Length: 281
Length: 281
Image 1 (cartoon, each protein chain N blue to C red):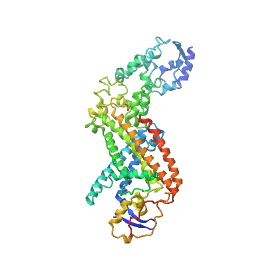
Image 2: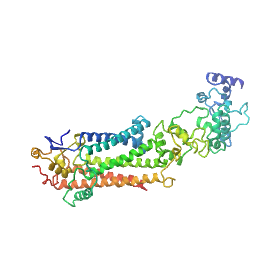
Image 3: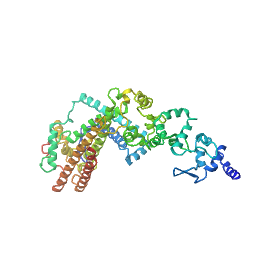
Image 4: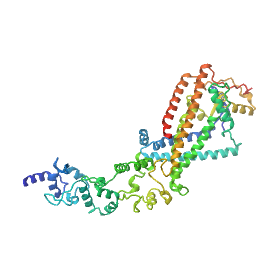
């Protein structure tokens, strides 16, 4: 069992956020998701020059396609495992519903935007999961259901048509194709920002490897959860420490980095509108 | 004149692959620039002995295919489409089984009526006639010389088409479903793509393909005009879901970055969450 609270010479008090089990789940999802994107987009954009290059990287279409299928099945196995894990967690501990959206999240989105626009000086105090994390988790559940279901329907068409007419496969194929781009873009935009490019964590939030978050980060990211943890424990005396977190927030005030990123995301937004709006009619 | 023929024969004897009967034909027909005028058009009569020697028919006398040419000077010479029909008829003298299928096909009808040249030679070559051992990609390329438009577009959008165009050797090309010599059209009962035969045709690759499996269009383009609009509307809905979701993410990130940029300028603090009520002591 990993200790919930530990101590680091450089970063002070460290709080366990992700268990080893959870980190492995994230890693398997990361690998299979990336593989599915790389081997799947060439099928959607079969005319693109890059698609032919990716195909040749796999030594041919058929190998690439089987890689896609195998990786998708592994992702579904990891997904199924996650629900076994949730059930086991609920059985062994108290079931937790902290990830589910609450009214508080809607209030916090508005307040966060107001805060960033300079309309209020009060930053919302996030709990165990803030709305950004909840959005991502729920999008992953939704995305895996859509991709998994449509993927299986397409890979086993002769079984699918025993239950539904064939046009249903065609409809789910359109969903597979659309959801793929939505999911890939969501990871590139939302997840890459929140885990890598956010000036608070640049170049990378290492929690996915270490599983730990410093007290300084907790105060910033999950103050409400931190308060709950501290209320619970009865050995506060031992936790007194003067060590400041010297590792976190190194680039948080780098106006150079923030400026470059503003330009990057502005270009991304223009690209998004220019690429997708004409396709919408 | 006779002695001249002997000289030519002497040259030709060196090319030992050529049947003796053909040597006299080639005496004239291998001359470069050998041509005639028909209907005001210049028609080349030259045959390259090297091309002939490369074909599967290299041991056949010229007159197996050019059946009406039995003496010199030639009687009843035909040109153009008439020649095509005449030569195609001679193919069945040996290739009776295939010719039976071919003669029932739309290809023969079109050739016979002069609508298009889809004769045996159109696919198999003329003097370089070959047994076709084509890759899936070459097959598609051959058929799509004529078959373009909605049929080709629909194939390109299908999984079969995408896979083959990206180099698959397992997915279905045109002839895998439609047959080569039996290109009958789906309204003919004997066609491999007729309503009756479709399940069996699908079952060549998709084991246990049910009747339901074959009910649906394979050459499907997503369109509001199509019989089935649902896949089309799903794909459009996803475009807007992508624009709204990813657009929201990008705008949210930009607002956050602007907020951070402003803060970084105003005061040089990183953590502005009020943590006075987090009691560590």
